[in-house]
Length: 153
Image (cartoon, rainbow, N blue to C red; front, side, top):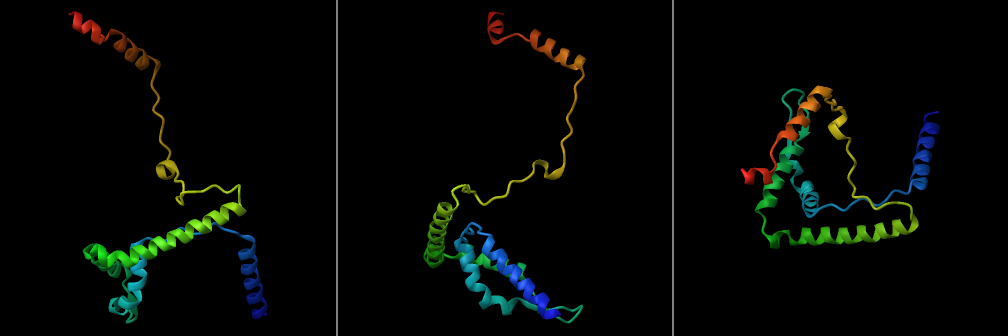
């Protein structure tokens, strides 16, 4: 019975892949190209054995911090291969996006950013003024001298 479930799950995943024609993903930046190439090389250096459970843990945060510092120190010439690769990926993305938009004329070209809800879900309370406060503000504005009246005095 377990094999039937697995085959159904696989079939469902394949069906979803066929029916869902998603737009191409945005290309990665030159820094992420650099990170992708350096991670397999540096990963063994950042594996630590936990004192609590004795298991090994990979410290991604520390590695990325060090890679960022290394990236900042690199000269333009050292960064060039990564920048070129990122430009190549960007060109591929543009071609893929053009093809996608031809096949999906109703699809809008999005910036790739999600729209945020204003206030992060919290509603701003509307401050209500009484009629008397509004009248005071209006009367104050009426009494205030204009710039031409100030010059006459």
